[in-house]
Image (cartoon, rainbow, N blue to C red; front, side, top):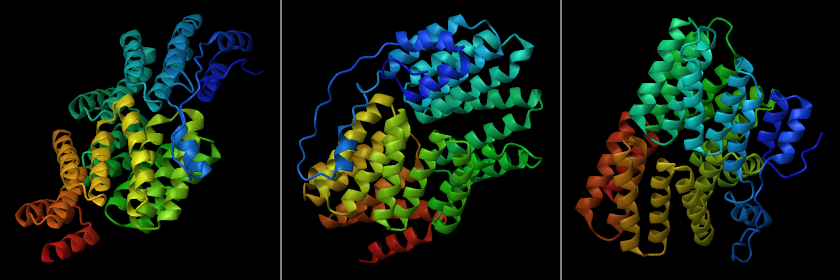
Length: 414
């Protein structure tokens, strides 16, 4: 059967999975859609790929928010059962990936309230707790994230659910990684794998491997990182898990970016963007917009860099992605420095630095400190330059990123 209107593909699949065909047809026919023409970016000489990406309207192309709310109402048609809660879990997970964090939290809180006193739904209750922990991590709300993950871990331990325990440890590692604490992150990823030794899910192992790939990328072990990513990608391609495929494409792009293979990196980001725009994965879309902005700075294509940075900033505010907001300001600082607008550049860098300190993100703080050090060196503020470069140096020494260490030591000797 076909939906009569343009709705989000992932939501359509979700409806068809959990409702009977007759129910699904009625739901899809009635689902609200708001359609308006999008404004065109006035930038001449853009390749069709860039123009399409920059013109993508994440506010109006699919009115995801109202569609999710409608499906929450449609869930009333499902009797209270495991099937109902599995539907709500999936709906909440999609809301999370589409950047509708407040709706996702509401859905998971509803699940927790309805399942917390029913023994047969304890596993679903734990899954909802863990899901809220993930949402808070995406918003850089570290302590609430830890609190929910630890509640979920305790629940899974009571159930003797090793698979669930592994998911909790994997997410704890992700949170520490987002904070720039590479040693703690790796510790939790290894612990996650230890729960999976006895024939557990290959897909969960693949998720952990992706995170280990990210850690190796940060520590400049690029071949190891790519091996992790490509092994995980094959597993997710077998089951057509588009969210994970888009994430891995982005992470492979990040590795090629670190290797300074910029065109290969752009190709991977374009693949991630294509999947994300087609399916509404706004979190991944935002990361790839941001990464393309950075590459175009390196290529000195500053108009394109600014266009992608602005697109990312708008999306970051929409989904409340504070880490990305701080990163956009760093890239805007780089753009203004390239234009010799040093005061504006400094303002952007200092804003990024303040945000990263507030968010306790040590890696991004080090990256911004490095950029500030370079800027101050260019405008003959040598003491401030040395101070910021040394702060960055100390962090990179701590995570054993030796190429960065050598690069900064060279700058300090100039």
